[in-house]
Amino acid sequence: MINLKRSADRREYILKETARYACMDVELVEAVDGYRLLPEETERLFDVKRFTYRYKRHPYPGEVGCTLSHQECYRRLLNSDEEVALILEDDIVFLKPELVDAVMTECCEMLKKEKGGVFIYSLLSVSSTRGRDMGNGYSMYRVWFGLGTYVYLIHRNVAKKLLTDFPSVLADDYQYMNLKGIKVYGLFPLFSTGDSMGTDIQQGKQDIEYVTDIPVRYRLQNFFRGGCRRLLLLLHILSVR
Image (tube, rainbow, N blue to C red; front, side):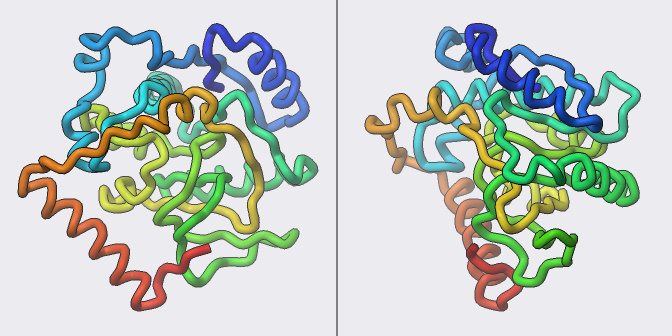
């Protein structure tokens, strides 16, 4: 469970919340506070230039801290004997708390069987057109775009793959994961909600610094990513939700 050291109220909330569920054995992970990183620390830990070329803007400190925090969770998973980990941020709210244990257990077993994958419980903005009925009014879909990293399951093989690249992407860039061959799954309708460190990330968004001087190599990569998404939507393989 990811928590900023200075956010004692959120820490108290999430520990009380997770204590309700038998499937959760909580390990606290101190979040990286992107707003307290010196510029040279950010450059050492995060590829700001590659981020700007990919997203055509500069990263917010909260986004840098969020990505680095989740990567620390991946390292802890690889240093453990566990096959799958549930990663939560400290403001998670489950909309169907009575289903949490059963749903988490079923999805965890699925990832173990597949020996890979990510299962998110946040908003699915672009996902497969067809889903699989999971019961209780929920269906499972393959996810291309989703919003938030406040709660998800991840297999250790995926954690290992995501740690091979130097940090340069948003923690919830599920398109990036798909293009790396990682299967991302999600539930619809919405199973949980949260701020996803949004309070910190939102600061300064009125001062977005867009980047236009992008090398041809990255322009082509961006064109390819957009083309893949548009083609899958055109073929009705993906749908906007």
